[in-house]
Length: 247
Image (tube, rainbow, N blue to C red; front, side, top):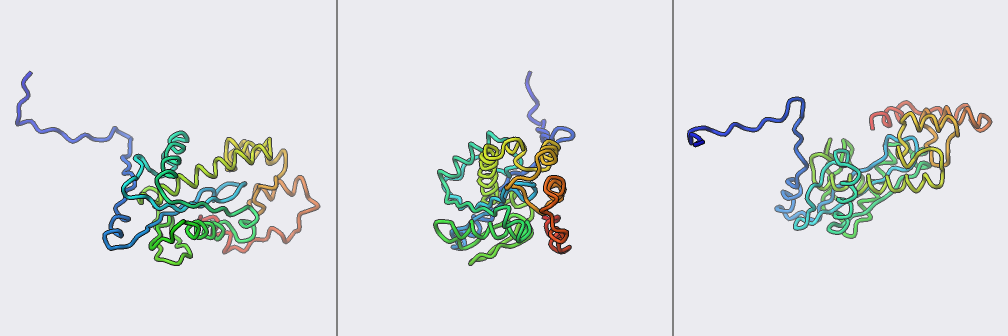
């Protein structure tokens, strides 16, 4: 069959019900490089929402000549693909990781603890960056220019790389904590408030790795250790509570 050359190829449309997602790009970093601004770091955290375990923050400076293919928001990747990209990013990039423990989260609130960990990760990079991109609406206290990008892990390549480093590091840590505190299922749900975790928390009570001021943990402590509960201990400043909820 001879096709009429006058026929035009029709653009391929996404399947019905499928939303086309544009992967993150290195455009913003490259624009800074052209202006002589380098190194440029991206940073992100994993673990704001869980009831247990630390927040893990990561900062990454990608090598413009050796960017691993397929870097994306860690939430869009399978665990297997995250592990592959984790190894590739570690082999080709400068990176650093920092942790905010449950004790710090209890003391400072989840938002402030997360920002503290992000700043620590940036400060731990082998070479101080000249510009930092951070995921979210809040800038980080660093010694250089900082740009907050809402949804940055799906937009800025360096932030996406940091999201992978943070997520894989935290998942591995939660699997290690599962060995220390069996029965909670940390290796499965990574500390998030899924039904299995809530059931274990109600049955076993909180562990040393749980965050004291999160409502399900408060309820479990009152049930298992009522004598340790100070009536004023869990009175949270409404401003702080609002910040944590927004995060």
